[in-house]
Amino acid sequence: MIKPEPAKQIARKSAALPQNNKPIPVAPTPPPLLTSTDVLGLGPTKVSGLLGDPKMIRREKPAEVWQYAGADCVLHVFLYDDEPSGTFRVDHLEATDLQGSKAPTDTCLAGLIKK
Image (spheres, rainbow, N blue to C red):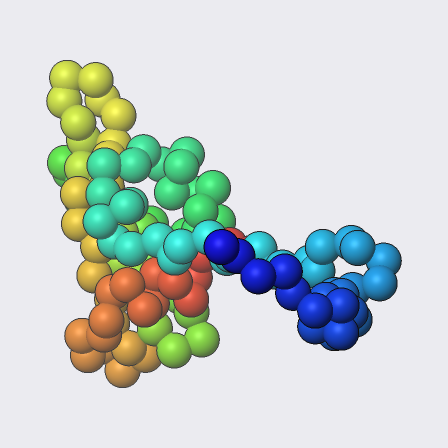
């Protein structure tokens, strides 16, 4: 048999609840950061939508290398011609620090995503 709660305990529990009975707002979960894997296979329009216009484009058939400069890294996005469609797609990404040494690609990418 379940014992009923004494009135004093019920009153204490009620006092702890918000008086307006409105739910307490919870901050939305931020979207997950993109990684280099998420960018592979994207076309130029989607890459520009994520990162903006590249600071430099180097064209070397059958590829284009788009460079994006951040505060502490440079992201190199390699797009190759997806024959026979003629559409370029991201095939590879790599990052360097400002001195040209290899840097973590996903960290660099996260810092460059358009806000």
